[in-house]
Length: 322
Image (tube, rainbow, N blue to C red; front, side, top):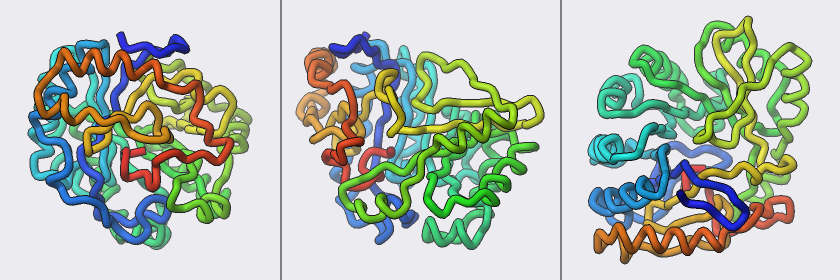
C-alpha cells in the first residue's frame, strides 16, 4: 500500500489523459484551450504501465479526467484497459457531459461505474455565460442517459460570489426528483486567475449550516471516496456534497494522487511541480515505477498551503482535472 510519512494511505488515482477541452469555463479556460497537442500526452501503453504499478501498490479506484477525456479518440480503449487491470475495483470519470447522451451505455458496458458532470447553473443562459457553450439541454439529457445506463451520477457546481439563494433553491427543487449527488465546490485559486479568485471565492460553510438546519444528515465516507462531505435527506431523491479545500483539516484525509496527461506525478493538486516519470512509463518498467512511487511519497507535504496563497504549478484546473 502506498503510504506517506503522515500515515495517509492512497487508494485513489486521478489520471488525466488530456489537457484539451472544448468548453471555456470562466474559472478554468476562459480563453479556450491553448495547450500542447495530443501527441504529448500519455499513450495507451504508457497508461497500462502506470495502472499496473498503482494497482499493485493498493490503488483500487481510478478517476479518468482531462481536460475533457472523451476528446481522445482512443478514450474507449483507455476505459477498457482500466477496467481490465487487476486490482482496480471502481472507475469514475469527470466530463462536461455534452457527449454523454449518445455514449453513456457504451461507457457503462466498457466498465465505467461513475460519472461526475459539471453543471454550474440550471438556467440555460447562465450556464452558457459560465461555460462558453449553450449546451445545458444536451448535458441534462446526458444525465438521464447515464442514470438509465446504471451509472452512479454526481454533478459538480463551483461556488461563485454570484451564487444566489434562488440558485440554491432551484438546485434543491431539482434534487427532489433527480437521483444524483450534487456537489458544491469552493473555487480554488490557480496561477492564471488570481483576480477572478479574489472577486468570486465563496466559502461553503454557510451552505453546510443551511443544509443541517433543513434536516440534511451526514453520510459515512467510503475508504476510496474523494474529499466531499456528503449529506442525504429522506424527502429528496438526490444527495448533496460539499468540497471545501479551505476548511480546517481538509488535507488530513487525503487518499488520492494525481498523474497529469504528460506523465508527471503530482503529489497534490497544488504541488510546486510535477515529478517526471515518463522514462519509466515509456520503458514499461512496472517494478521500477513501483519503487519510484514509494520513494516519492516521502516528499508529500502535510497540507496544500492554499491558505498562504500558494497555488504551486497549477496554472489552470484543466492541467490535472481538478
